[in-house]
Structure formats: C-alpha cells, structure tokens
Length: 303
Image: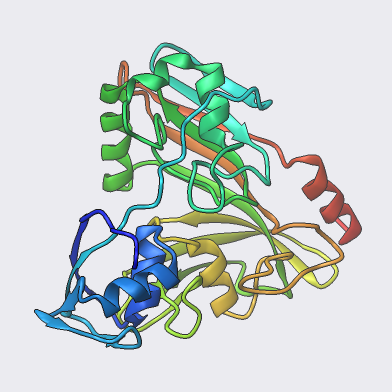
C-alpha cells in the first residue's frame, strides 16, 4: 500500500509553454519527479479542472491545482564558513561572495550555504522564523563571485527589495566572453524564460519575460573580450543567457557555453553594487576586485 501523502495545495496559472507536467511540478515544488508522477496517477493533480497524464505538455493559460507532499525543509544551522565582509552596520551587511558557495538551502544543497554562514556571523537573522532565506535580498549563482547586500531586519529587507523592484540598484559585473564582441558598447534586449527542451536551463524564448543587459568593452584579449556588464532587469541567469544568445558565451560556463582550460568556473563577478542605504537613504556604492582565479584567467588570456 502506498504511503499516505500530506495534502499540500499547489496552485498556479502557467504563463509560458513549460513542457511536461511532471517535470514542471518537480522543478517548482522540491518534490521528486517520481513522487509527482505517483501523485498524478492518484488524481491529486488537475489541469483546468481535469486529471491529466504526467507527460501532458503545458501551455500558457493552463491552470494547475495539486496536492503535493512537501520536501522535508532543511534545518538552518549556523556554520562557521569564512566570509569576506566589505561593510557592516546595524541595518545591512555587504559581503564578497566566493565562487562555489550556494546562497540558500535548496534540494541538493541542504547546508554549507551562504545563509548558514550568515547565521553564524549574524545570529539575529534567525528571528525570521520559517524562512530558508533570512536576510537574502538578491542572489548570485553558485559559481558567480562578488558583491551581495544582506538585510539584517525586516525594514531593511523591505527597503532594499523595493529598490530592486524599481530597478534603481546599481549592478556592474565583470565578464570574460569568448570571441571579439563588437560594437564596444551596446544593449541586449531579448525575453527570457524556461528552455522548453532542457528544463534546468533558461533561454531566449518568444513568450519569456522582458530582459535587458547593457555592456561595455573593457579590453580585447587574445580570442576573448573582457566586459563590464550592467543588467537592467533581474531574470534568472540573465547575463549568461544573453551573452550566449549573441554568440559570445561567458568563459567557463558549462551550461550555456562550455568548459574552458582558461578558467575553472564561469568568469562572472559582481564588481560594483550601489543602492540607497535603508537606514538614512544616502547612496552607497561598493566595489570588489576580481578574485585570484579570475585575475589569473585574464593573464592567461593575454591581459
């Protein structure tokens, strides 16, 4: 007899073509795909009010209603993971995140994340009961290094989140891309959504969300271009997707480009971060130099 499953409602309307129903739900719920398939067979998942098969292909406007068993939430334990603190006061913490560090617990990454490190550094963040992302206002990919701001209390979080929504936060990344990118200054405007063929990736898709990435060439190297990149929107993997879409993938990006002997990970670094301080409203800006692995990659590329 199958084990009983707690009834947890999962309800949403699909906004873009999303591929298979079972894969879509597994990606967004944290429930394993095999378990999602069992729930579909048991009639616990309905699309537009009707039972569907696991391989049903979702279309824009489809309404999903499901009762899913939630994945066991990771426990948030403080862990003494070294962090480079760029700035700190009673409202915020600005850190230079190292590459290889996941921002918050998620399926496959239950601990040893930035959040675990922050709880060790700032125990007061534990006041946000039930959250797996205490203090987190924005994210960087695991293998992207650089600046992040963390809110120490709810008012600071709200103020910083509002600025991100208003697109008034200054973000400048340094990226090394394959090939010679011309013109030296430009903008990439292309909608981004889930890749319909590979669900773990994002892609430029016709019905995706509007996205814009500005760039400026810093230097032309031997077969590469060093860029200052200024994302004007905040879509998942935006910089990497946009640069790959114009034929200049980020060096070392194994998802949207390919591995590189030049750099052991994707060459993407959050170099400048500026915003209005949530305490007194003054504009503050921080800079983080390239870490050693990326500096060495530039040198190997002839920079």
